[in-house]
Image (cartoon, rainbow, N blue to C red):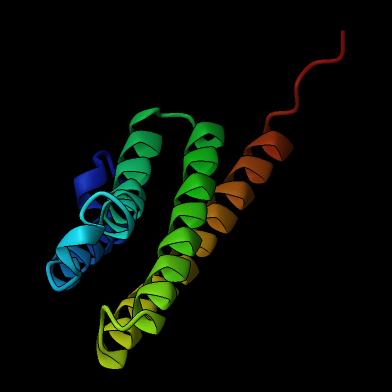
Length: 132
């Protein structure tokens, strides 16, 4: 595993998601600045932030927990973008682009969780805890 979260492709894609989200939300109506715009941006920022925080904990269990939180933020963002599209704040193409990126991030996150779980099981199998 990488020594730094900035080396992780999943984190870099999360940052790309944030940049795309900010670009899209600039088109939202001004009266949504403290409503949907703010919520969408917070959900997007939460994705790479939780990846970074989890990886920085240096515990696979905690990393998995933060990756699960990132998955929740991805689902939240997807929902908010669908709502924004249905309200006419974004074009259908913008929404499709964000959803394609969130689909990729979801697959990557679930894959990383699965990999970390497998690594943990392998370590436990090789080094069982002594019975007390």
